[in-house]
Image (cartoon, rainbow, N blue to C red; front, side):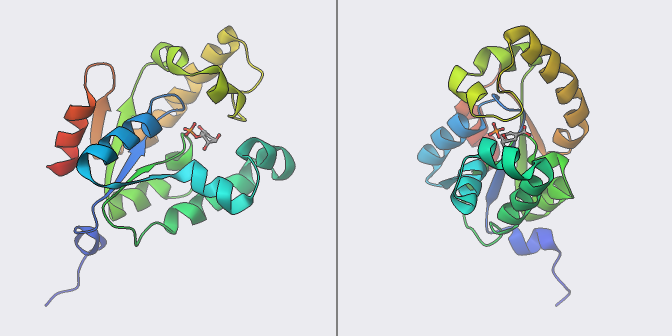
Length: 180
Ligand code: S3P
């Protein structure tokens, strides 16, 4: 028997990584789809919050973004032995270290795609106030931040195995992609 590639090793684990910008609906969609498919739902930000024992905003303020990205990577890697799980990642997760490559090797990656304007309209006040990169910005400033940031991140998001157009598609379409 030949050596198994990491894709083959992980084939039966069925890990689904949802990637995309803040506000694209990874958590909402992930929870819905998990409920319908019987997969478990894991929110990476929530796991990190448990790990650090404080909010992500507070952690950013105290230790800086680089320290957060390190914990984010370690927390992501800790999920490799999960089974049948839908994982909502943070908006920046795919864009640091080799995280996108790692996710592609360990499961199915799905990019939840939305335009900057659609992202802005979907971001709730609570989301804005709990995201260190968005906090304190006016609507105009948010759009000025999201537009180039999304461009910068697109090369990473686009490495996802599946692109899910969140304006044109429904959670049912996402379920089809997952159980294919
Ligand atoms: C971040 C997105 C957040 C969270 C952190 C940084 C980013 O997650 O990980 O605030 O860099 O885009 P969500 O995409 O779940 O909001």
